[in-house]
Image (cartoon, rainbow, N blue to C red; front, side, top):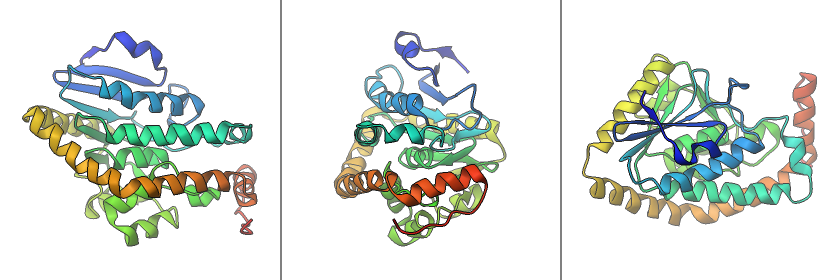
Length: 271
């Protein structure tokens, strides 16, 4: 692929950095977890990633991708009980707020290659990138409601921005996942490819195309568009992230986790 990035690479355990000409390639890779589920460590690293990209001065574009089996399949259910510890949910909310804001403030064009399933936070990050390509073997969705939670980590802004409010509600209120073909038909992704390897190659081609453009024109155009995105979405994100904390303490969320553990359908009560 290219040469590794030295300097601060050691600060990340689950993100790999490489350079390919003018493209900085960042790969989400948890060797012990083929689904790249988000736990405390990966959430922390994703929060630190985008300030790292804001400080990038050598590359002209970024490719953000995953491993063959997954981009990121969303939150790790084994991590959720730890979030009930005092102060943890507020820390999580503040990290999510920084993460999404910092992603939108990255000056370089960011291409996302959805090599495998992108769910929850994984989907939010993907949809807030600048160009998205997706493997036909992957699925894209935000199933927060299925575990009794509000999509407070960016889903309530990423999906309406990409689809409009009506279609966004169709997917956010059900948690249904999209195939690559449907995602392309709805305009969520620019291109689909047969598999993870070709998806990564297509993502790199898009990143190199953007890197070959006039840097100031590309970066300033992105900056102007994302200023509009921030203006229209900040209040919605604040509300969603606060309400997600409320639902983390709900009986319905506890019931959803119990149902998953016991391999049965949940019985939600609205409490």
